[in-house]
Image (cartoon, rainbow, N blue to C red; front, top):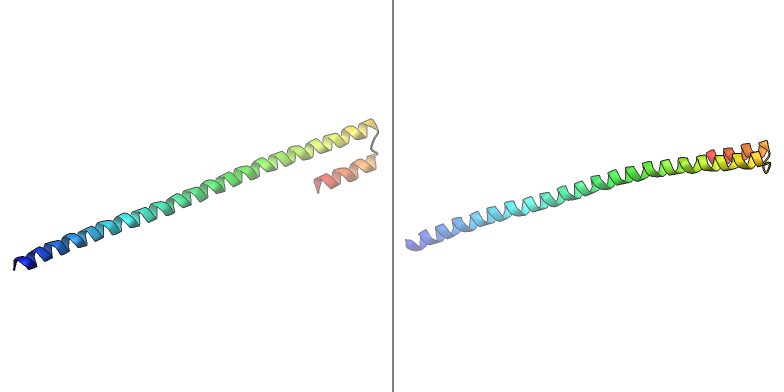
Length: 92
């Protein structure tokens, strides 16, 4: 009779340990997925910021190129027609 009592208590303890371990493992997996989602969100935010920066840089570059063309036209190195063609090429 004492053996059944000891095995019963040991079984309850074993099941309790398994339940606690399972919960801890599932929390760890959930935390890892959350961390991955946060990392992906941060990467998306960084990519959006980089795109905005690149668009600003390309706009600056385009305006600089048009200003350079205008200077060449004013110096007489380009005709009005060449200036217009070059400007269209830059804008497209």
